[in-house]
View 1 (tube, rainbow, N blue to C red):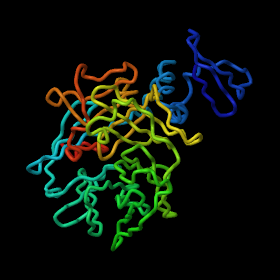
View 2 (cartoon, rainbow, N blue to C red):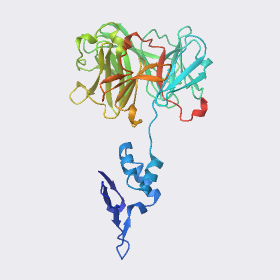
View 3 (cartoon, helix red, strand yellow):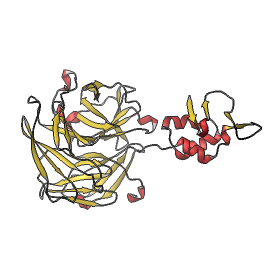
Length: 376
């Protein structure tokens, strides 16, 4: 049932009743009944644009007029694309998992660089030979340079587009079992700021290999499953007293630390644990009780996992929902490997997927352009 609230307190429930929904026009002295399908298209669009995709679809089947209004404002999100970094040459491929199409771009600007992170269509890259750190948008060719900084193999992330004033670049480096070095920078700065922090919990490994920015802070996942939080505004570092997610013993096999992924959605921190012999397990951080809870469903959400950065999407086409898409394509570029929580299985079936064996710098998920003309 869909309840639509209209101005002046008018409301009507749309059900499977065969009768045409009607409302009473109080402004007419004759109090004649008029069909809801007579509502102006402008008013329908104002109502339907506030509905979720699911409710928008439900409303569209009420009548022809409602269908027109609902479809006109219906938004189905686009999934991220999988960007491949070639071992040789400057030809970069982008795979669209929804259309199963591959696009190519010549990007000579990336020669000699290594990808670190992606967000909002921007790549963060590093040139090991020159220690140059820079942002690059592959669809607009915009470049934003940062001060030189030596990045070994520590993870790096940023909070938002480098063209915005609040953009912060963040990296954390292992110094000792109880000490980390946190470095930050922002576009326009002349140098990086590095401060050493003591872990509040001395038994926690300080090797952190996953970062996600959520609600103004950077969350860092350690090799052993502990969660550290850095607040760039207050410049504070804290290791949460939340025991790591509980996984079966056989999850901790060769390269098990590479088979973990972390992302966020609407304020929730989500972690994906994988093992070549088991189905993935997804955990959500219950921030009220400070515990990890295993998820049996994503409630229509779709996750896109890659070693350096992972993404989440809502309101994707139905076949992609409640699934995890991994950064590997099979069948000559025709099928992205995914795991369905509804079906409790991988697609394609009967494949052995050891995500710990994948090259972490070979590809990464990136938000696609609004206008495809930039790559066609």
